[in-house]
Image (cartoon, rainbow, N blue to C red; front, side, top):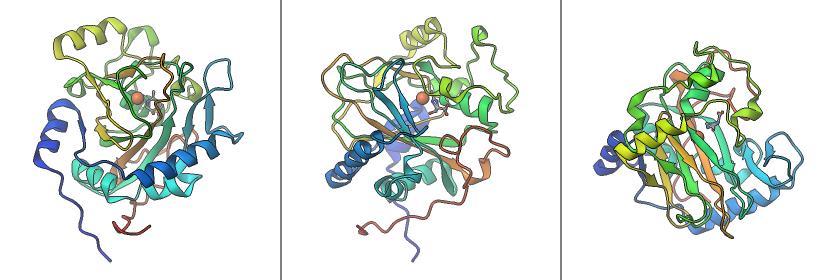
Length: 274
Ligand code: 6CS
Ligand code: FE
């Protein structure tokens, strides 16, 4: 049964094109959020490479490839609420390139330095164009105290900001680096702090705050970061990266839970199916 894709409100599209990110008008229903929180508990207890810990600890930093391991996550990526935004903003059929849940545990969740996501996908995976999109879902209430995603509006138009201190390969062929340095607090590719601060001074800073269920979209090139979590409230952020099927890297080398090998278009779920 062909399902008609939802139309994205014009203002949402305008916000995304102008700023490189937007908050969607609609939230994920509470029962979906509840199921995903239960998935986080189940997956966090498993001993597998997809479960990444904070430095020198057994505090879970992130869960990767969850849509390949868990029914609620596999269902989420097919919901029109997320899939229609991705297809509408990218303009064609998409597949799930990457799926992660960054937990940012209370008191123990470490920072994410200033960076651009496409830098990793270009240098390490050979993704040819930034024709992908991050859809973020808040699994917890997020405010300015528990380490919200911080974004610099308009920075998505700057292309990849190379950091001379990091000597990136820059040739768009898999750099063969250690993937653990792409998902830790000590990232292989960062935007120099001074440059990010200057951009934020000039263009402002936006915080992706909002109650559990809030859905945001952000561009692969937007400069973003988050601080460590000094509060007593967890800030679990679920991130689905959709990529245009036509933009799939030819010879990915990083683990499949970071760079999908299945590039078949995602099949939309009927709204009501539960
Ligand atoms: O290496 C990657 O694919 C991941 N690393 C970061 C810091 N952001 C993009 C992506 O999730
Ligand atoms: Fe990122």
